View (tube, rainbow, N blue to C red):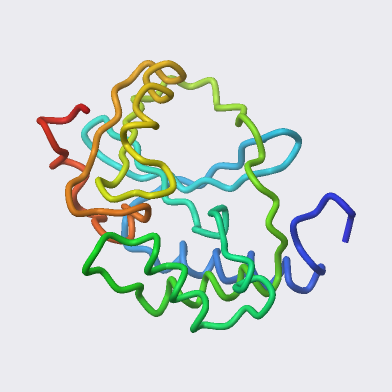
Length: 180
């Protein structure tokens, strides 16, 4: 593998890509797959939504991770990290634990890839975060979302960092009538 690759090996890259493709192939929500560039890296995005909203479902392997999980990637350490990302009272699903373990075994943490080159087609943008998100807290994220995208941040009550996992059908029910 090239030195700039996030994958530890070509076989690991293929395994991760195949797993993601199988998950998207089995997803019963109508969606569109796109590849966008971010600081020279290709990022796969699955977009879904109706009523003018576009929801992005990104695999959590872009997410912050604990050192222990990368040193000894195992379902137990992945589940522990996921519990920290979820709102109180939520447990990580088996599929998500499987993904986090797969990503830790076969990729390196690359940090944020930088600003993505978004497609030219106009889209309605809606940004959600969970009320209990400790990685992107609503109070800190709100101003950046408004400044960068020109929309107000919407906050989902009872959700943590993994909103699409915890509340996949709730983007229509944000706190305070939609803004915060």
